[in-house]
Each structure stands twice: as structure tokens, then as C-alpha cells.
Amino acid sequence: MSDGIARRGRVVLSAQLVVGAVSAGLAFVYAGRDSFYGVVGGSLIAVTLMLVLGYTMRKASELAVESPQTSMNVMYVGAVVRFVLVLVLFGIALGGLKLSALYTVAGFVIVMIVGVLASRGRDSGRPVSKTD
Image 1 (spheres, rainbow, N blue to C red):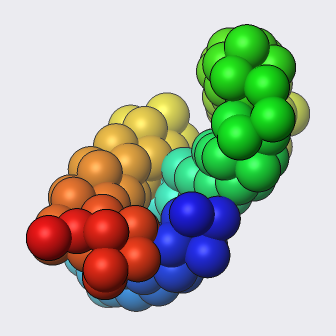
Image 2 (tube, one colour):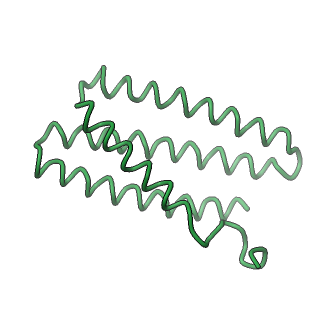
Image 3 (cartoon, rainbow, N blue to C red):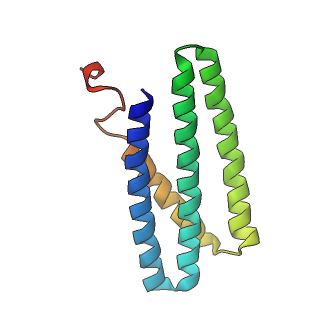
């Protein structure tokens, strides 16, 4: 099961990176350097959250066979970690680096939407023999 999660994670990461790069390029062409930095910052926040989610899901799926309760706890702790991480990363981006709020949030939202859409599909992550 963990292999399927890793495979799906690579597809999502690729889609997010491509859309983030295209969005940043368009922001640079149409709105300048400050918007470019904002979109890159928002995109990096979204990609970081996706990487943390993938790690949490792989850990939980490995533990699910031996201890379903521990697996569930790992997922809950992962959700808390992602929530705190998004607050900290936005605080750094907006407060510390003084990135444009509009473009940072826009880059984050666009890349998160792409991540959700890329994670859906026919490939559920399960082995082919188990999907019939």
C-alpha cells in the first residue's frame, strides 16, 4: 500500500511543481518581481504541506496492519502538525519575508487545488489486482 501512496505522491508533487512554476512565471510577466516572490512562497508552502501529508500517510499505512489505533493516531498528529506548519510558514512568508499577501495566498490556493485534483483519479494507489 505504501508504494501506491508514494506513486500517487510523485504525481501530485509533479503537478504542483509544474503549476507553481507556470503561475510564478505568469505573475512575473504580468505583475512584476514582488508578485513572483509571493506566488513562489505560496507554492512552496503548499508543496511542503503535501510532502508532510505524504510522509504521514506512508507511516500510517505501514502501521495500519499491526496497530490500527496507532495508525489513526499518526494521522491525527499529522493533521495537527500540518495545521501548525501552515500557520508558521505563512507567518514567515508574510511577516518575516514581507511577501505580497495577495500573491502568496493565491499561489498557495492554486497549488493546493491542483494537488487535490491530481490526487483524484483512477489510480487509487492500491495494487492492480486489488482494484477489480
